[in-house]
Image (tube, rainbow, N blue to C red; front, top):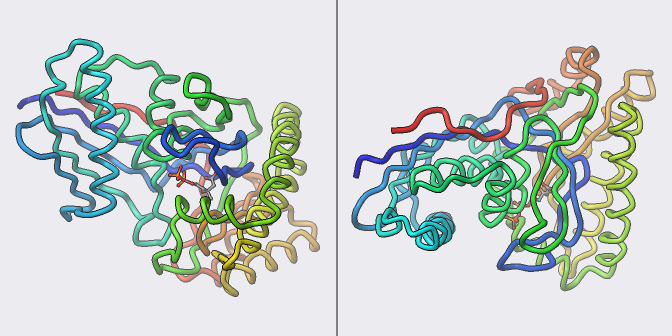
Length: 326
Ligand code: DP6
């Protein structure tokens, strides 16, 4: 075939985290979440319609097994939409070629940028004309957090049913994040499996969900008020709560290492000196500092010695979009 489309998407870091599902198949979250889309570590994905089997190459290597299965299942969903729309592209398979700049090697692999780029590239390749809301709903089916990478700068992903669970932009003050990689190892438990374990075995799970709803309302208010201090405090506390509910799973799951905790402590030490910074971490050991843009260089210089890779200053970035089509 000669239908070729390319899209680029960036990872996002949640300030109010998503951890737990109301529906496993539709990937509906148990609570809403809020994130900043980053301006670095992009994934660029090209989809070419073809005959034969679906193919997925990531950073030059043919993928087999679980990650290829997730891509094929996602392509099936896109072909289902094409079939409903009466498009004959629905008969074609797809060759998916993705390049992920940095995060995989830095241990900050993001399924968010991957499925956001795939949603945009594949829907265009198959001839679907989806708006941002529909693309966010589609990306959600690949990976929940991918729904937020469709959005420029700051996004709220709503809990709800299949129709209303999508991300949309929210106004927030300019902020900087500093990535502090402390490990390059692959994580022991995937987010997908870790969430199930937490839901099924952590006695704090219900409190986690209900308190997240409260924190989300407080975070939305802090964003509207442009209150970076409040945004930072809420973010750090919510991240700590997520790692606590996860740690309380039976058997226990722990994503943070002593090196991660050292970064949290250094960020607290900066605050004690009057340099305002806050810490967050996803389902892995790497930490992100949240700070004001004018403090980013100072905070980065202080955290760089604790990092095993490059500590990078990141700003709010663009939502997923096509960068070319054929
Ligand atoms: C800790 O979106 O990767 O980063 O929906 O099962 O694919 P699935 O999970 P995923 O989980 C992300 C979890 C998190 C928090 C967040 O990004 O909100």
